[in-house]
Amino acid sequence: MPKWFTSEYADFFRSHLTKEEFESWMQAKNGMIDEALSQGINPQEVSHYWYKGKNYSIFAKKDKQDFRELTQHLIEDIKEYAPFFSKIEREEIHKPLLYCISPTDSHFGKLARAIETGSEYNLDIAKEKFIQGFQGLMEYVDGYSIDKIVIVGGNDVLHTDQPNKTTKGTPQDTDGMWYDLFNMAFTAYIEVIDKLLTKADVTYIHCMSNHDYHSGWYFSKALEAYYSNHGNISFNTSPAARKYIQYGANLIGFSHGDGAKDNVLIDLMKRECKKSWSSCKYGYWYLGHLHHHIRKQDNQTIGKDRADIMMIRGSEKDILDKVEVQYLRSISGTDSYHHKYGYDSPKAMEAFLHDPTQGQIARFTKFV
Image (cartoon, rainbow, N blue to C red; front, side):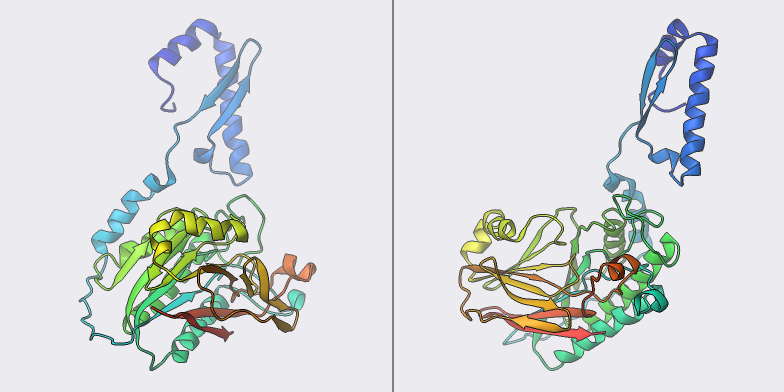
């Protein structure tokens, strides 16, 4: 019996239901379990259901648990077996720079077939393009005096949140089982983070997203546990929809891009980070979700991918007290649905170079 079925409930059933009615109720309960299993639904995840009998309509509801609590023991176990890393002692950099790499919308597990969409995308290709993107972006800044690297996680790193479906249940073309998606992405991130740490200290920022709202968060928490014994990397894996970091005169915001709109994000940055904003000259939002390059300033589009061309409008170099909103490209392939409706964009991974006093001084794009 479930936890809620206490002795008081048992007395109620004995007093108000006949033996036949109770057996009918149990049959309905077991029928619900069989129906859930036949539809690929875990009965343990069914929060409530109704039983309607001849004399009573019974509402059964199980205890709710915060999804963060469900993984706490797993995270603690990973920490216990996490490898030990010697802290890297670094020389002081006189003209430091921050390098922000945001591999948005990698969609590990997405399936695309060339015969249908014109290009292939699967788990192996996702990892290949992911590594290729990072290697290219790091080669671009070889020789730069970088003292801090920001890497963004989440942001639809996994294509699904349940078997072949997104968090809200939208069906997806998928390559591999759910654990294959997790394992491939996990090993890919460890490979690139290890390389980034040889260059500079790393900050990992997690962005909650719509394809993998739960599994993507578990993914980032597992990475945090794996590196729990490393003194050169820090994590921000809170489930908050928006994250911020300050680097000198730069205030940089991160979000997936499926929530608050552009003009709202601009105001939110100034309200949610009043203290930091008061000491910053430059504000930036780095978003994903759309898989296109889109750059906005003062709510005006000044750069956007359009078919095979890149549209660029003039903008003021001096953006003091203004906030730029930038949507980033994705390495993921075009699946059946997006190909059908003509939604396509250049496949790329992008990064940004920030000077502590001059703001964003460069944008790098590695097409894959």
